[in-house]
Every structure is written in C-alpha cells, then in structure tokens.
Length: 160
Image (cartoon, one colour):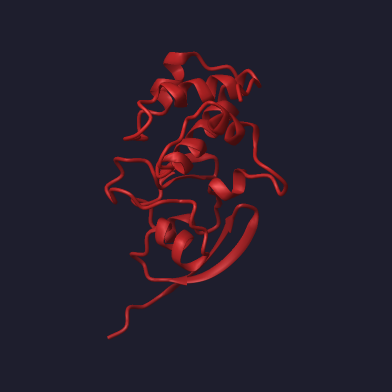
C-alpha cells in the first residue's frame, strides 16, 4: 500500500515550491532529492555532525532531524541561497582565503552556521564563534582556520 502524501508549500532560497511529501520525509531529503540542491550534505543522520545545517525562518536547524512537513509555509535557506548570482559571498571567499576547508564535506553546514552567526552578531569574539559552531563537526581542518575565516569575514578581511 502506497504511503499517503501531504502537499506542502515551502520557499527555498527565495523560490516557492509546492511539493507532495510523505509525512516522514526529512527536510534534507526534500532539499537534495526533490529540489536537487546538493550543497546540503547528509552526514551522520543523527543531528550530530551539522553537515545538513540550513536555516528555517532564520533559525539554524539540522535538516536530517527536521520533517519536510514542518517546513510548510516557511522560508528555508541552504548554502546555495547564500551564494550571490555572480561569484561568492564574503564569507565563502573568507573560507577559501583562510584555508578553512579541506575535503569540503562540512563546509556547507559551517558556512550556513557562520552566516547565521554573523547576521546575529557582526563582530563575534573567538569564543562566540566557537560556541556558535559547536554543532558542526570537521574532521580535516582542526577548526583554527574555520575560526580565522569567520573572524576575517566579520572584519571583511580575506587573507588570500
């Protein structure tokens, strides 16, 4: 027997989408599979790694723990929504210029989380950056370059 579907309307990166989803469809699956926005990564599927971080109505959420039906009528922003039509954002350029990415798997979630922080607090201290990014794991960089990148973006300084 086929699972019943629910119609939802969600704005993703400023574009409204009406979708048919099963009640248990995760937001990350809607974003990646249905909308083909693959910048949001699936990592641990337990809300621990932060690779799937997006914002819903401006609040950070782990999209692997958030049901698509919960996004009905809401605004979702993925890493693609933070990228200008031409080029890269100051934050993205800062990540590149400060060598704050290696394998790149955590990068989209880190950038979304860092962007949310900078929108809330345009000049965070190192400690505030660390506290804000605690829900995002990186296995490659050791975090120092990520913290440097966020500070540089806050100060509008890109080192490379």
